[in-house]
Image 1 (cartoon, one colour):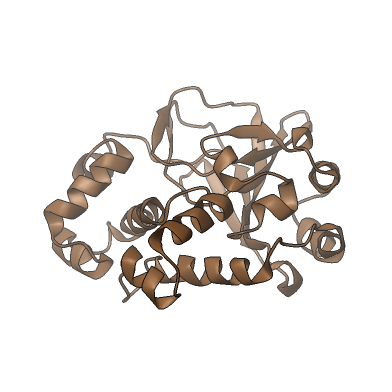
Image 2 (cartoon, helix red, strand yellow; image 1 turned 90 degrees about the horizontal axis):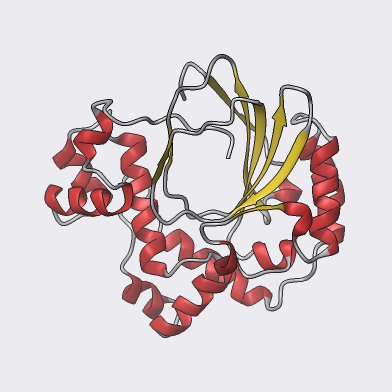
Length: 262
């Protein structure tokens, strides 16, 4: 968080957890910086932006495979709410496979399903505080059923195994495929449909995001070891590939790091 942005997590009701993994309210408290960063992200998000005049805009933001750096902050936007969709949620909710949304920012109402259009209408009317309880009541009854619930369970278990956790390195893709008795090709197809990324790319982004979260509280070598990299040089190389610059350049303040409402 920066001085210009106040970020506040909202409680996700239990009835929404199969579909939405996180809700965050962001308020712009002052002048936005001249430039800002969008870091890589594995999740598809729904974003409601509110401008100074009260006008709202509901967007769907697909996974981002690499960082991007911008100098065109929309200074009319004063607040937003971000909802992170869970693995396997995009097609039942929005009517499109996650892979088709990678790198995209689209108006939610333009997507092909009635659920997406009704959801856009809800998001345009409700405040951040009203959203969780309303969606918990309304959303489950509107959702198209998953094509195969067992595939969704498998996907989410594989996502967990490939995710970096404090004190736990991500598993190797081949080991995850073996554990769940599928081929690596089947696992890749499952991720492409339900997440939008290959298992390997998912794990790389998740690991670099872990580095971004913990880099200022742990020595580089220790962070590389606890995050599952072979050594510090491999961590630096992966970070540079996804972020465009090495870690030290990013964290010494020579590049912007605030996250605006998108």
